Image (cartoon, rainbow, N blue to C red; front, side):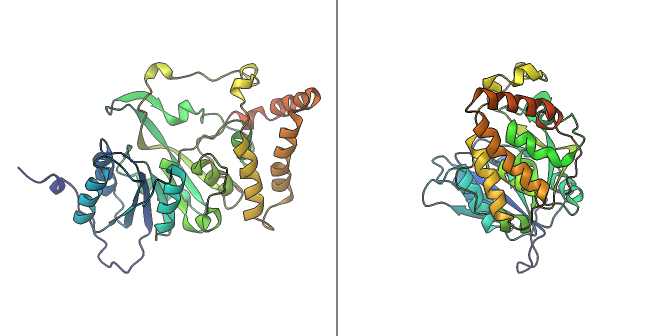
Length: 320
């Protein structure tokens, strides 16, 4: 019976001293169930000029053994094992710092990449800092759930002013998946280290890209994104404005203030007046929450900016 690796198009950087165009940064932790399938999908990419950097966060299952097996077969894979558990954010940060490519693609351990995942992102990014694609949702067994991530996160509505995309993140929720992103290394030089106090690395990267050279999104499906605890019955409908003003739909997000202040610090002297006003308003908004009159002012702000806060677009180019 042929060895399982013979079914793969084996990728080798023929000149190991040459810097690859793309680095794939993967963070792993107890991922033995799906890690082979994801690594195979990465190694079968239509773009060949890439390396894979994997940081394992002290897995207690067979994940590290599997990574060692792949590393021994494929020179394009470099694996690192943490001395202590860092958590997913710090583990991704370590993987990104170890990448040598001009661009860095983030990868979860349990997704499946479409064959043209990297090709589509490379064609989409242009002169922007980040490109991101759509994802098809699958369950733990790989069954398609009949929904895209863009539908779940309501990416199909369009604000008139793309520069207001950060409003969606500041006043509602993050909506772009790190596992479907390609990031320009020069942005990481600014964005890393990750600020203390942020909840998710991909939310931070999206925002700082929006205030730098921009963010591009393509509606093409490039990832099969695994939702272990999700099924089709959990799909939701576009909520009403009255629903959004309910406290549970507008939780306090302390890390948004951290993100805004960190953007001002990292891009000091490079922000326009309108960008600074947008960032400074976030502090005012949170102060307003302390009084009834302030809450009313916030309600008016949400109403006037409804299209930006609660919607975004599936083909956007942000440019200041």
